[in-house]
Structures are given as C-alpha cells and as structure tokens.
Length: 419
Image (cartoon, rainbow, N blue to C red; front, side, top):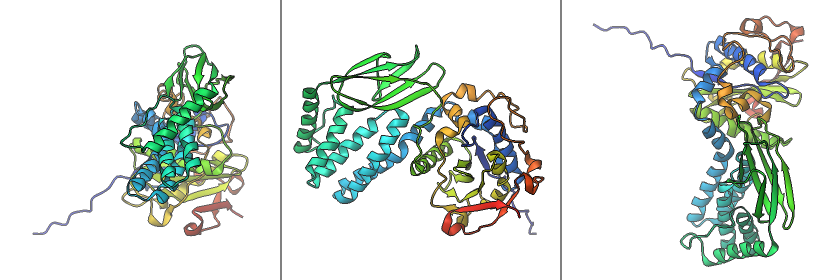
C-alpha cells in the first residue's frame, strides 16, 4: 500500500533587522522602528522578521569580529588575489588588485585604526611595481610602508635585494628627516593605539613624518579614529571626541556603497539569519533592500520620496518585499542587484550602538520586539504605523504604489505617491 505523504512544511526564513540609516534618528527610536519593521516583514508571510534585541544577543561576543570584517575583509580579499596573481607571474593583473587593496585598506585603517594589513598591501604593491620596472612608484609605496612600520625587517625569501634596499633607504631617509610628535587629548582612562600599537595617552614621540592612524577607545565602548599627518620636528594635536561612529564622516556616495556592502556582509556572517534587512535615507529618497548571507547577494532596492517623514515612507515599502524571497529563503534570481544602496554607516545609530557598546545595546529601553511605542528622546518621525497600520495608510499619509518596474536594468524599483 502506498501512503500519500503531505509535503514538508518549511519555516519562513529569518531576516535580521538592525536599525535604519537615517540622519538624526537616535538608537532608541531606531530600535522601536526596527521592531515594527520586523513585524511588518513577518506579515508578508514569506519571511520571519527578527528584531534588534534578539540579533544583539546572537552577536554578543562577536562584535569585534563584525567590525574587523567590516573594515578589512574587502581589502584582504583584494590583497590575497593580488598576491596570487603576482605569484603566478602576472604582475600586470596583480597591479590592479594591489592598487585596489591599498585604496580599500587605507579606508579600512581609518575605520579600525589598525594599518597592519595596509602595510602588507604597500609592501606587496612595491614588490609588484619593482618587478614591472616602475622604480619611482615602487619607492613611494615602500616609503609609505616604512612610515607605519619603521622597525619592520623584510625577509630575503619574499623580497629581492633591490626591494629590501629601497625599503631600508626609505627608513634611513626618515631618520635623516627627523621625527614628529602626536599630542593626544583623550578622556582619562581611554585606551590609545597609534598605528595599531599601544601608545601613551598624552604624548607620542619619535613618529616618522607621514600619515598615522590614531585609535582611542573610552571606558564605555565609545571610540574615536583619526588618520592624521605628522611632520618632522613638529607636534600635531589630536582632540579626541569619543562617539559611536563606525567610520569617518564622508559625502562620497561610492564610498558609502562599498561601506554598506562590507557592513552588511559582516553582519550577515554573524547574525545567524539567512537574510538581513537594510534601509535608510539617501538624499531625498528612502531605500530598502535585503542581503542574503547564503548566496552573498543583495536584492534590488525599493525606493520612495522621503518626504517629511522618512520612517513612514520607508515602512510603506515593506509589504512589497514579500515577493523578493524564494521558498528556500534566498533572494529571487530576478531580484538580485549588482549594486547596493549608498547608506552612510554612521547614520545607523542603533547598529553603531550594538557593535560598539554591546552591553548597552542588549538592554532595551523600550518594549522588546512586542510592538511600537513613542520615544521620548531625539527627533519625532511622525506617527509610526505598526503592522496593521501599514495597510491603513491613506494616500495623504504617504501610501505608495509601483510606478516603475525595470529592475533588471536599474537595480532599483522606485515607488511614488498614488494619484
């Protein structure tokens, strides 16, 4: 006798919600909105929203790993690829990878405060340039490595005599030029690193002239990172203002795209969910998308005019996200994008708090993932709509409908007011 078995029921895939990138939206308000968003994602029926308090618990003890991956993983990958190409006697192809690694790791050092990976990129770039006969450019790269690692000795198995000679010449030139000093004005009890090494909290002497990276961490987890120029024979003052910044402030949209890519890949690697929600404000638009930690893909973005209440405008887009996910918990192939929203990392106050002060982030000051409430601190972002409210928004309150559907070409689906 044959038995007819019912098809297996699969649970909806979890999607992590870790705050919004909206300028002026504080961590407490962002947490409350994230709870609403998690519920709205669950209401689509195709995924299960997981709010920030649960994700914060899952990330506990791994925050530094997320920050390190955010700052350095892309640059490390480029550096590794460049090394492989160079080892395979393809210096021309290696050069592009190594130049990219240097550019990304310079930004990464400005986030992490640790330029050790950048030093390796400078040295490998100098090696490749030397092999191509680009002596002047090779010396410039090696000199930058010498500024950050003046006591470094190159091994003869990896570096040929001419590269070692050029590196030693760069160090000798720095000694001849003299050294500079950093006067670091930081709160008492702060941990101070200069170029990734422990340093005096008030005065750091004997630094070669050039760019150096200062990292300061306060007793409560807030931090400060600055890339600063040191001149020979002079003292440069660094006035530390501790805060919850994930990266240096910038108006560069391309940089924000790369940072968003790295940040959500890092979160996805440790959030223990197959999907991560990302959303916020870019210019006069709000955008939202999904990241799949299974496939490493980002979805196309949904966007709408931010209007007077960007949170409300963003919430109204959530129901359309339900069609983006497959039954196996990945992003539909026809909804995969080649780019990501240009979200500024520092505009997500909640995620900054979760990663930089995990003990504080784990203790919610508002109802934990049970429903909306109104924050008494920070700016008010209109009257938020809960899960049920999303279906009740009137046209005058900011309801949006699809007005453009060319995701294959644009990577973004734009929504506008219903006439």
